[in-house]
Length: 403
Image (cartoon, rainbow, N blue to C red):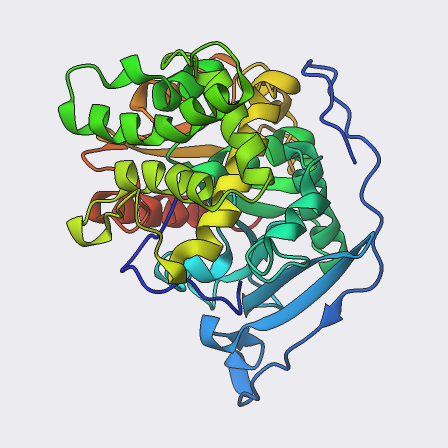
């Protein structure tokens, strides 16, 4: 549940089924995605010798493609210290965002001499192919997308790179997917740093997609009413009963159908509704009734993957991330997976109380947890959030870099 992290810029057009498993403490990963060799698609920039021979900056990142089968592939890039740096998996938000949307923000958190950073465009997003940003018709390749399948994609990348274990770093939807990956593959995780917590629960779903959640906030109620209009019209067109503005699941299912049918207005309204809740800069606000062509590819990707993954993870195949927290007791070094949680107390899209549920669950399960609840909103680029994230990275490195 995340949009632009820094200054807003035109969406880059060029960057333009395995099931979820039962949510129980005897959780066992399903068959892994088959993959072939990794295709390197950009040469490393030549560097001088000496101590820095194996270090690349984010500007010198090496790009790769990993075939997944069925005509799909993952794009990812690597930078930092390949020889001795601590490996890091960056899990971007959205869902439907991509690495390019973050404008190299990870260079603020990770020292290229100390870390080896792996940034992946999740399946169907950004430069992973086929990309929904390139063509709305590519949605048909991902109607069965699931959080479990996306975690398996990361495991395929880890194996392709020959990495034994890594630090997992993600925010917003990246906290959801990062936590899911950690619970599925705890022995591959040196630690988790999670920001803007979203646990894929019905309560969180209602917090955004039910009108009563915004009671007393005239601005948000007006935004919600504009968001509701396409769903109301669609129900009327079908001859169905009127839409209950607090019936969040039905509202999003109507949107899911409209988005998958390529309804441009529905795609734009869904995207703008969330964007305007998250944004901290008035210049980044968007008019729900006026489509901005440059932003539409991003809007299509975010709207499709959010509606589909949130419905699947909340209602169709519930993820139960909190219930699976005890799986983190068996980490890469034989002990629990140390976890850091960064949460803005003013975060409207991912409310604070759900982050507190996670930190309580971690502590009750015997999983080491460091929490940073800061006076800030949702974005990683917010001053308080950025400072806390860097503190988490430094804390991890000081305590666990030898793992």
